Length: 487
Ligand code: ADP
Ligand code: MG
Image (tube, rainbow, N blue to C red; front, side):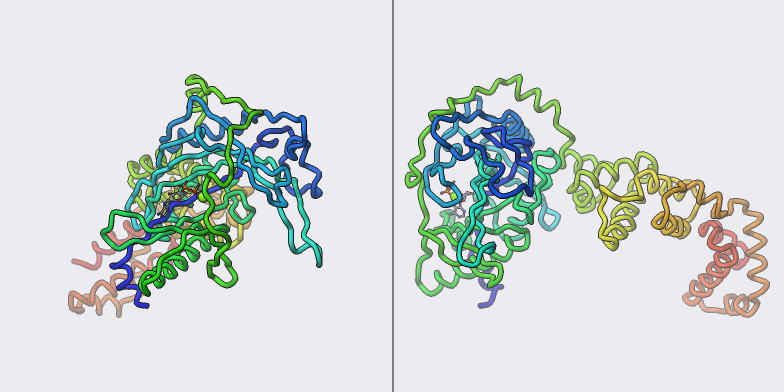
């Protein structure tokens, strides 16, 4: 199949359902702990198990987190929100219903920005509702039996449903990235996809290019990494195209992504809301949300990625560079401190995004645990900007810091005598010496054709820098050399 032809013929339509595990200390409807790694089945209480006679109470923190998410995505916050029972049996849900929301979700009608190929696009958020998680089936613990661990039962989830606004696997990945960035900024989830704190189902359909109607979709479950989302969607798109192009029709169904075989396969025919026999949970009357409560939450929100992006672009960074820094709250805050001290935004960017991140990557370290702190990089940037040290010397200092951070930048400059030579008479003496010691090159320079001159000029600059151990200011060296060579 020629993908170039396919791309102009078919348009991909994707809507994502993302489950975000909220980082509340206790469960959404009980006081049982959500600590990770406890002995199996020690952290599900009688409420999580739905035993007769117990009553759930809503965790206020979970509600607050959902509202914060809603505000950050320009959504409406329901002034009356309601929980419903979604009925189904599964071994990891022995009480046979999940408390979720159907008609009156806490959050609805918002959007989030994504950036793909330098172009910003708004992706609609249909709704985000609160619900409880189920337990976990474990199939690889016993040889001849499956195990059930109910510790996770009742953990607070926020299910975020997007509009079918995404048009490619790349856009889907960018959307997930934006959601991930946002929930970590808001500190409502650790956002760790590998550990299941963010899980994704992808709804995928195709339609003839230019068509207004949506095609029949499939829902692909279990796409739990950025890479798998991309692969699963691409697989599904190819599969649907080949069905339609051979005259068949796509069946509306739920499919499972197998990351080992890189394929999706049928799991069950698509169920509708009616199959779950949803009804309002009689134990949880509708919740009234007060406007003041919403405003209080708004007041405590940090500066968000969107605002950081605007700020960084205003400071002079490109869209792409701003995005790279704004994507991670700790990185953004680190960068802001560097700029505050070092003042030069672009220089600060290259020191943080290239030198620092490169070094952290190489050492499997992270911005949170970095021994080199913003004060170090800020001081380096400042001293370069002021002309106290050259960029090259700054790299030397950086490598000293990477071994040992007990001394600060100024102490290292002082101690190792790394200060740039500011005395122009001193530099001039060295220039004169260098010219004297290289009379052949001087002769070559004088007789060379114009286009050959820069190379020889560069040779002299190099000799002077060498003679000063890199401490001369290159632009000063250039100026003085011109005076002697270009007469
Ligand atoms: P359900 O509860 O049955 O899964 P929803 O109608 O709430 O269904 O839709 C779930 C997701 O499917 C949403 O993210 C929505 O954007 C997406 N979606 C709906 N129709 C299509 C379609 N034709 N192609 C791709 N995605 C779709
Ligand atoms: Mg669904």
